[in-house]
Amino acid sequence: MSLAPSTENFGASEGGPELLRTLLDCSNDSIYFVTSDGKIFDCNNTASIATGFRREELLSMSVRELQYSLPDKTSWLKLTEQLQREGSRLLSGQHVRKDGTRFPVEVNANYVNVSGESYMIAIARDVTARKQLEEELLQSRKLEAVGRLAGGMAHDFNNILTVIRGYTSLLLDDSEPEDDTHWKALEIHEACERATNLITQLLAFGRRATHNPIAFDLNKSIERMSHMLDRALGDEVELVLNLEDGLPAVIMDPVQFEQIILNLALNAKSAMSDCGSLLVETKVKNDRNQPVYQEKQQILLTVSDTGKGMDPETLEKCFEPFYTTKDRGEGLGLSTVYGIVTQSQGQIKIESRAEQGTQIYITLPATSSVVPADSSTALETKIRHTGTEKILIVEDDSCARQLIFFTLSKLGYHVLQAANGEEGLEVYQKNSDVDLVITDILMPKMNGVEMSLEIIKLNPEQRHLFISGFQGEERIPELLKRKGNFLPKPLDLYRLSKQIRSLLKS
Image 1 (tube, rainbow, N blue to C red):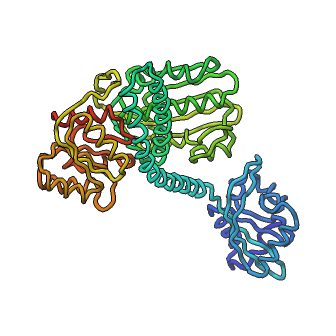
Image 2: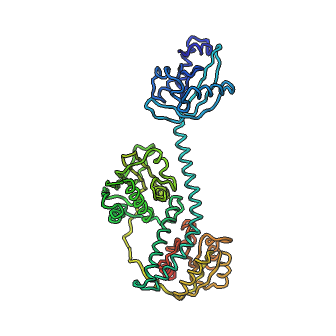
Image 3: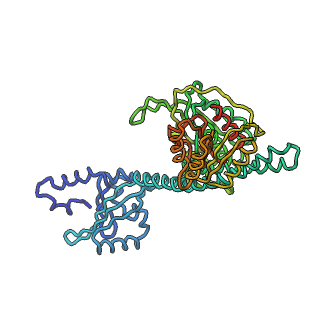
């Protein structure tokens, strides 16, 4: 059926119908003309392009064959009745392409009457791109909300873990390896480490984790991890490294980078029920196909496995926190990776199909900074860094404060304490000979940064050591920053005692 009979009044000129046809074909939206019984009797070229059907094929179809949400005649009759009453409606649904795939559309349906005949004009807009943006925004908001929750949890949990970890360290310090108490304390300490890692993951995907970015060699980091990865993957999974020589350094937290590799390796292992392989590749990426070419180099890290892969539904949700397909799992692996990569100014992309494995592409900005030489030292097993200086502790958590007070007193320091910034400032004003102020950052009444800014007005040379289980060095103003004057919670007493000596000697 031609469009011409229903458009003869659009223009008196001889070429009126042709002009209208051209106008319809120029539209970016699909336009359908439909009879009262649901048959498509005309459409524009955009409809053919969007669906993959030739125009002749569309004219032999009904709306029910095209509109996924109208599977039967009853649904169509219900819609036409609504249109007769209301005149027009804005509908959301899905159209079916010739290859069977579906895509989201927004349809402006209008009921018209021409020369006693009833028709429907449907203008359908492909909203795939908009839906993708909406999903990305929703995902971002989910992560932000859980990140805020994680931050609040981390502050309290890290104070608790500081106390448990701290007194366990004191038990280890006071006992010998052959003592019954010693190995029990070691078990508690190991449990604390697992809890600490869980909190770190929560903060990482919420992009609130404290991190210490430095320039380092990606390849060397991966090579150092290879033995640990072999053990984690087991004999059934082969680890293959393909690392490009001469790779520039990247700037990020090397500990968090190792967490990325380990999380991806463990995810891959769980996806391979029997045997398989895990391929880790690095190379320089200069993508000249991007709309704007950036000369600054990027490093592409690719992690591929031969596992069972993911179906589209799982792939869509894989970055969601606490989403897991495992019988036992926290659902934080890929969420953590996403958070760390984003925090490090990188990008992540995942490609996967069911039974065809998974490929994860992580792009990180390269740097021309020189990689510092390794300066690793053996882990200390005793708290030996003693002193006699005067130290002020400002901490709102009473248990954590008492732990630090007890530890430093035992090491020979003269220790003062306060429960918040206001109280700490008062104590300092009465004891101006304090050698070091150790303060939490997040506290009621007056936080640690505000208190420290007031203290340096009294003594510009005053040394500070900031501690926090939630907010990191970025909260410390340049005026107060010194090398090594921040420690994350949960505190390690060995590291705390060493850091104190280092600051007091500087």
